[in-house]
Length: 192
Ligand SMILES: Cc1cc2nc3c(=O)[nH]c(=O)nc-3n(C[C@H](O)[C@H](O)[C@H](O)COP(=O)(O)O)c2cc1C
Image (cartoon, rainbow, N blue to C red):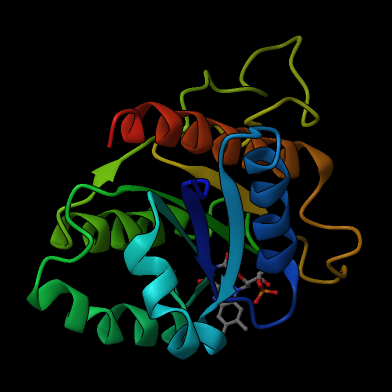
């Protein structure tokens, strides 16, 4: 029997959100019972059937002008064909976003991912971590340093490449989300 698929559908204009997506995949790969697959939005036309069969879809986007990128939104609109038949209803969903500024209006983008998932009737899986970096003894190296709850947040300095940013703390936070969704997918598909 083939393993349940946890797909990561993402856009990345300059590689930073791709690095975050790859960190999500690392977390998924910690769970042997599922298969993680990266799906850049540019390749989605050949991946609709894979997505239809997935147990979970994790959505990821950079923040452009205070929201998800136009390329990600293009994917969201194309997914309306799935919405017509509620093909993704009851799949697990989760999200990650990455911006240049510390805040950068990331929450707006996460809300767009959440709303997309809800339009499809999916079941949202949040981060499941306390905030890091929020006390006198805490540091920017803490897991969940940006203190999100609804998904994995990352920040990438705008003058550094994806080989350097987002920093390790944000990549580990992304991996945590991937593992959490993968473990949830195992439970969710039990007996299915
Ligand atoms: C068109 C455009 C708009 C952007 N708008 C924002 C923004 O609203 N808030 C922010 O913090 N960063 C913004 N940024 C910075 C990106 O979020 C940041 O550079 C991110 O790491 C890019 O990810 P990517 O390399 O995956 O495309 C913007 C970048 C671009 C190119």
